[in-house]
Amino acid sequence: MRTYTVNQLARLAGVSVRTLHHYDEIGLLKPAFTGENRYRYYGVDELLRLQQILIHRELDIPLAEIGAILDAPGFNRLQTLQKQRERLEEQAKRYAGMVRTIDRTIAHLKGERMMKDAELYAGVVSPEKQAEYEAWLVDRYGEAMEEDIWRSRKAMAEMSNTERAAMMEELRQVEEALAEGLRRGLPPQATALDPMIERHRAWVGSTWGRPCSPEAYAGLAEVYEHPDFRQRYESIEIGFADYLIAAMKAWAARQDGR
Image 1 (tube, rainbow, N blue to C red):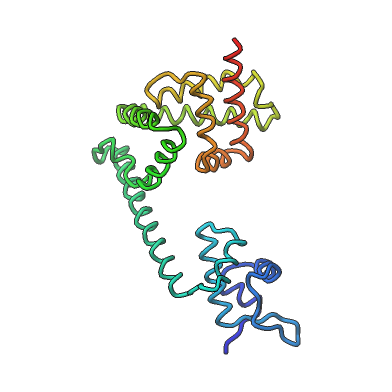
Image 2: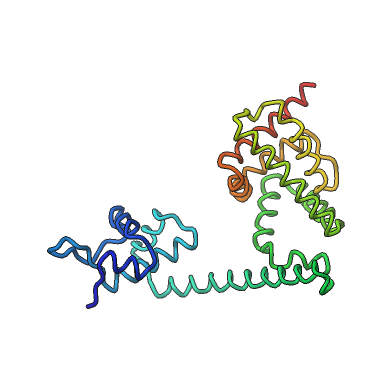
């Protein structure tokens, strides 16, 4: 049986020796045996297990969950690989669609071809993900939310490419300014944030196709509790999700007192 030392396996798999040591320490990937020279040695089973660990990590599954999956009594390596292949193939198709949309947009901006507005978003937003998010909204806020979703779609569809680009740039500037408040240590309740909050509320109204009242704005802050929103805001600045939610609610509460 061919075996590999830690250094050899690290080079083979493209991971660090430290990573393999860590996997050993937490019981995720133990060596087949330890030699008299105190070197760790890995065999075929360990190589296949490491492959599964790395695939699961690429699929954004935490290490603690990976161990539970691989050590489950009914775990079948072949079936798991087949399911992973299906999932990755679907992702590959989606990414290929996004690349085509990007290529068409580049050609459009260069004046090499005409492009319909609806083509801008082909393959960019997963229909399943959009449907899942809209269902979450309706389930949490009732059937009246369906009308708001329809109105928002209509408002976006009626915008030109230039208007959409300007709208997204406005959002970027507003979010960056609010995130800067967090970086500077301003509390989310600070009235110094009001100008940017007002711009943010106006931006929301433009996507809704109607004014956004203080009450509706506070309700939107609760919508931002959704994991997808949280992930997006945390990518701007760590802690920004809670900061923005608190700032929105604080602004809306102040309007009630006026």
